Image 1 (tube, one colour):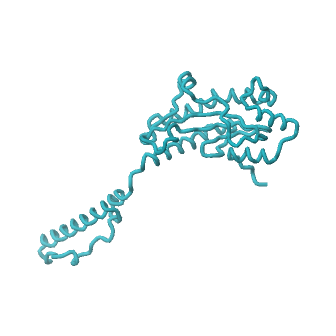
Image 2 (cartoon, helix red, strand yellow):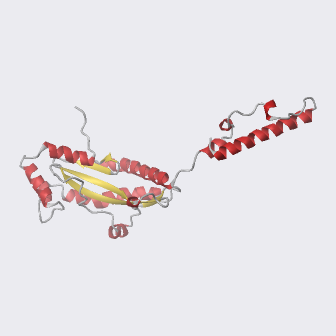
Length: 241
């Protein structure tokens, strides 16, 4: 029991003791109690019907917990809304759509998350798009596509933030996360859907070694270990046979 709850418990006992004495003396049929040992003390404050003490023992969520829960809720709602476009949530902040030789992916980054615990309840999400060649050997997911920089966000009037405690602008934020993915991400993904276009060094967003990995895959020289590693990086799990 916490210190505050314990103090309220003793206060509760004293109040019961006083109330019992008032009842006894008003009836005049029973002697007044002289000590706590003469009457049944409530065994636990958490059994009170109004649960006041139980609530006091539950600490208020920290900003970190509130922001974490708010961000997770936004990710779940985004997952449902982006599913019709073929994307699945394969990691906490990654959504993927696999093709024969490549994977389209969407990645969220909470602004300020690199600087430790949040100082307030604001959740500001930056959206990145990328294409991963399955045969690639690069050790991480390269964010090689458009992202929600100030120019794109302002031009499209995208509102990608909300208050995790009050819920202010939450619905608009989720709406605009989906709108940004559809309006900015999908045309870019479609542009490079053709492997020949994606492999064109003059047009491709890929690095030179990624283009070579794609060329090898198109020649039928894809390495199973590379494909497995790419899927692992993006959190893609194949259905069990």
